[in-house]
Image (cartoon, rainbow, N blue to C red; front, top):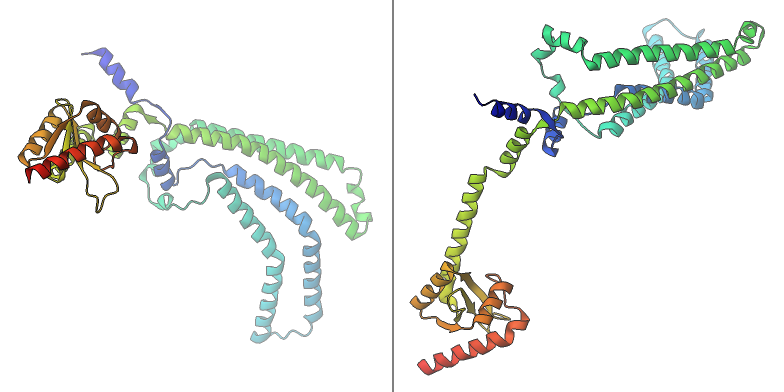
Length: 361
């Protein structure tokens, strides 16, 4: 047994290479992306407390109006079905006016947190049944995985930090907390709201720091999960580009077809300029429909010999001009008009050919 071969195969199957764009696209279609739930949580907490602070006057006003309305109309309410329906509709509208802005804010912030992380994405792969999710062995592996340890560390860190922030805030408020019962209701409510707001903002900022770490970790885990082996990259390249042998045969076939078309165009040529043995270029010129002479076939070596043989079959005049032949071969492709700097030399050759034709006639 060849040990070196086994070792090379082992290393070739190791997933050490970054994922290709195609692999990333396939993972995205399956819903596999680098995202952190902590980012959404932190943004929602910050938005909640900032929003409540900004919407505080509006919410207070709506609550006062709602309570006033029900107290003012409670005596006139009849306990029949019509009265109950009217009361229910009013309560629903009042609730929508109070809760609607908060829910809309949460919806916008939650959607924005997802879009910032992964962009617009929809995938139904997560809804498909997967037996691996209920596999006890796989579940046991997940419990003791690196991800589970990080999640446990995050939970402990969040509980510890949030508890510490709440403790420091309460300790700082000890001087006025016992006096809340002696203060007017509005002032007591304002003090409590300010205290809760400060705690909420601090908690949100701490969660943002944890979310940044979690996003870095999730992105690193995602990149590791979609890594590919060198063999997988080669296989993907073969699938995208085709088998090298097949590509070679396709290119060979394309050259054959191009060569056949070129040979079929030789009977339309007016002259074949040769090296005389290495190069052969067939030129056609029709003043009625062409602005300049055109190369209809060219080649060197064996192809040049075939061009000359095909020209002899159709009695195409052959002119030996080594310099012009090399220049045409180097500067002009089949189907292209000759460059302007070669006009004089080609015109001289064509004039010679036309004189020969007139003499023959």
